[in-house]
Image (cartoon, rainbow, N blue to C red):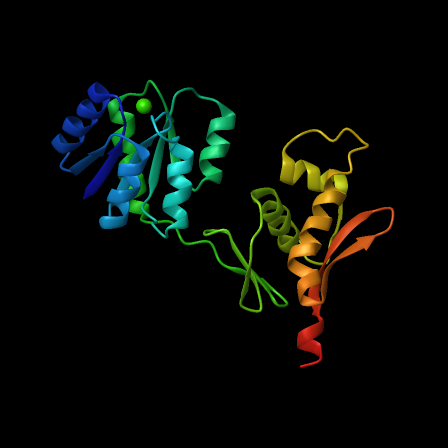
Length: 232
Ligand code: CA
């Protein structure tokens, strides 16, 4: 079993390497995010132990970029504190488990064994709706094969809409799920972003995927009307 340890603190990295080798793992160490991304692109690991605090980029970004590059080794994140926000961010970034520092070595190896046994997580399924396709793993969106560039918020909004086709989604619900902060009641943030989205995914294609439901919110058409496809 091959494990990659991503940790910049020399002492901690050394302890992990020796400890895991005693458990029978083959261990590679990366001191920063760039090195970790390079190693995971060159080699397949049965698990990655990934510290959140790294000198060049944080562990969440490393994990996200690994997933975006199609590397699906199970990732155990080491967080500095037992913060709920860190756990959620880690899981959102595609981590499989987390462990708060300081931890006992016995717990680390137990978690690692469980992850290795479970194997690589399944790649998220590409979502398709009408002529739109959205890949949650690589953050790519295209309409009938033409790729569409979205900002991360536009992407998150579209992903949420596509996960709930046909449902009327209120602005409050969209704010809560896409922006993660309390709605102040008079923000037109959602309308602004819906406009951005329409300008990118609909208008250039003569399509109309996102319906405005007056006084209620927005609805993703279950089968977006795709004008060009309709007329052949
Ligand atoms: Ca560190």
